[in-house]
Length: 63
Image (cartoon, rainbow, N blue to C red; front, side, top):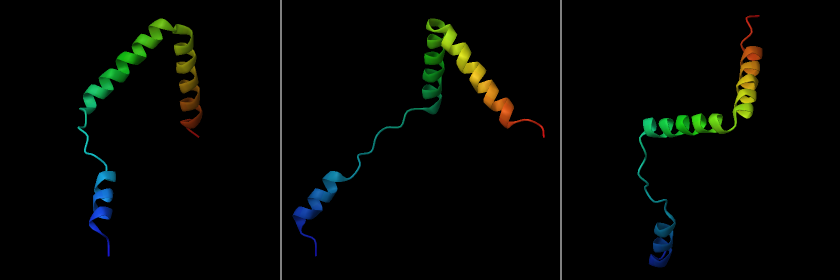
């Protein structure tokens, strides 16, 4: 049978509820970050796009 001390310890370890941000805000932040990154590092951004296109083209081939 658990004691009151054990109950208090279990309650303190319980995850706290956090406010969830609006998913549209998160998406907007990610898009803005990617745009800024592409402006600062256009070569790496182009290589990333080519890599994603290569993988998608390879996985989505019609046969």
